[in-house]
Image (cartoon, rainbow, N blue to C red; front, side, top):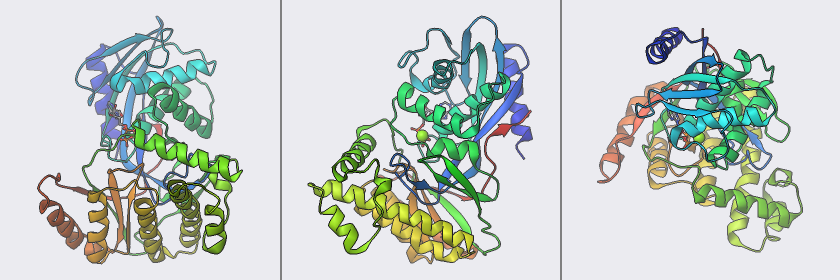
Length: 390
Ligand code: ADP
Ligand code: MG
């Protein structure tokens, strides 16, 4: 299905740079079934790769010069040298590919000059991880083209470092690992502490279900203060509780958890901690349900996850809450905002027959609000992770 895309990206590369690319690689965006903001707390996540992907055509140069172009980057070719790369040295969208090359160079790899053309159908800032898709496509292309032999979990860590230290977004490691390590027809159960992972089969059709994705059309931002503030609150809470990371807080519910939370001096820290601890438990519960073929029972787990990110972690927004509530009223089994938060996309687990009613109800609820963008919809099918296309 993606071969024509790869051919188009190769042709665009040739038109732009006047020579053929050496190869085309692609890396997908993702949705996260459950496990939000757990990935920088050494916790568990359960993402699924989407058919939407970033595709890069690349060819080496022998002069240390890098030229990057994106079909979604405003038209111009951005040029810099490998040698001059340092955090902040390249601004705008090109900071993402620049960061990927920087992190390889910092890791001691000999990075030559490169011509690169990018085309992506992962929407930006919609919580579907266009940034990780872009960086993972570039990193995998470099790894394979240069024969670096870096394993995929390590590439994911490099991509995270590029986003943290070059771009300046304090994200965890889920998005990058999802893009590089997901498999078709499965969700990726990842332990972000040691990067151990397992493909958990996700056969929605066999269960008579679909995952509807609702783009709330509220753009989030990772590099902004709200995300960083959550992250710092989690780190402070872990310190105060005397654990390495909130992952190590094992009481997931009941009096044990309450007693533990009582040890935190601020209500905000108690809320952040309760979200991370209960969210980790929800990931384990979701994996158990998938393993047992209990997909319908996943619905309430998703909805509980949304309540937790709305009430405890405070990363939801009116558009996401409306999409979730409206979907549930229209008969969905469960729904939650997915991704870093403050907008982006909502996932809805439902029977296919209910999709038209759910989308119509959400569209109507949005239309009733004067300033809201119209939502967009698609159904998610678990797609393969990053790979070479030609
Ligand atoms: P998300 O990863 O959820 O889509 P981010 O804010 O993390 O949102 O990343 C979005 C940013 O990634 C964009 O603002 C842009 O700078 C960059 N980006 C992603 N895809 C592309 C692309 N195809 N071309 C240019 N820049 C891109
Ligand atoms: Mg991102």
